[in-house]
Image 1 (cartoon, rainbow, N blue to C red):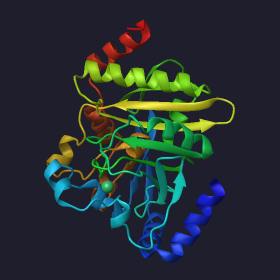
Image 2: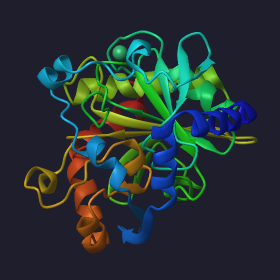
Image 3: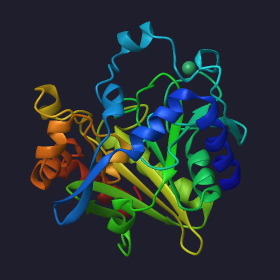
Length: 298
Ligand SMILES: [Zn+2]
């Protein structure tokens, strides 16, 4: 699979000018490290992400634009690789990380984690050295109307170091509360994640799924690590006021905070990052209730 993806990038870089431009944009990205709640977070300045960061994702705006993930609306030069029975892998033309992929469901159907979790685990296992993420429809997915995942190289990804050696279900990293699941038993892991999502949904009274982002990666001996980041909201107050153009989605929560505007990149501090993460994560009381219910088997 890795060879096929390398080949896809090689071919698409030549054939699809938008991807070529995106890869140059990524190579020119500036990154600096800040400390947030005792952990490293990378702040990455990538000007080509501004459209994604500020995308209108309200129902009316989505209804009025052609879906950019449906095959008939793709650039004729954009080609993909089939993955499993349901998804197709494309190169992301607006990369945040190396080998950034958009993994698109074959059907135009709403963004849901239900029906994509299996693909997340399988893709993570097929792609050593990668991570796979899911953005909830109200938590950073720029196409809430078309089911999709993302994947990319996890080299230097702060989340990987942040959860290494941590045991237990509940964890906290750079101000974010999270649930972690580990192991090499696929069906047990799927059951655990589905149950956690159902409890989150119930406690936060949000259906058909809770506000969340999810990340999965796979290691040869340990198996999968899946991290659910329950959310209270998508965009922080500083975005709404125009103070900072940051709009955290799954990759940001994995520790690479995208700052498409130069002045934000230059001035944002670890204290700011921690405050943003604390604002968008699930409130403490609800999180405690979720963890208690998960641990008690209710
Ligand atoms: Zn579509």
